Image (cartoon, rainbow, N blue to C red):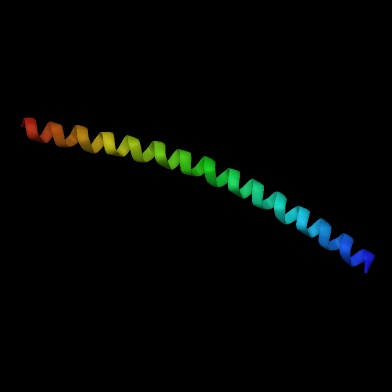
Length: 54
C-alpha cells in the first residue's frame, strides 16, 4: 500500500509539472498568435486604405 501511494504521488507530481509546462507553452503560443493577428489586422487595414485611395 505504501509503495502504491508513493508511486501515485510521483505520478501526480509529474502530471502537475507537465500541466504547468503545457500551460506556460500555451500562454506563449497565444501571445505569439495575438501578435501575428494584430499584424495581419494592420496589414488588412493598410491594404484596404490603399485600395480606397486608388
